[in-house]
Length: 117
Image (cartoon, rainbow, N blue to C red):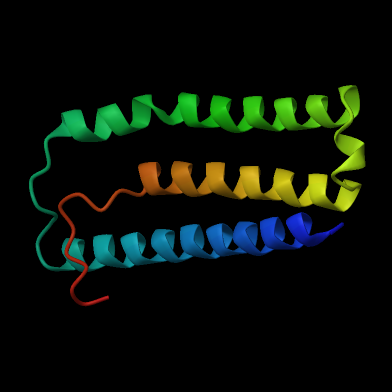
């Protein structure tokens, strides 16, 4: 049973890294198309400001979850159930998921047309 959790977590972490990079690329290309066609649609700036105000909370979530996982591993008997590879895989998953949330918040697709990309 050892290493299965780590392998699954690493695969999910790689998936989240790929999704965030793909989303960033799509938003940048949609922004370039919108600028070439005369500008983006009107978006209420409150929506953008609200998304950006949650960014520190997302980063705090990632740091806190990582610290709880590391502390729980070394201060309790999680060593019986998880290997160091599993711990590393779960940490990569937390970092990748937090990065995915941050990228989705920073590169939002409000007012952009994704039909051509």
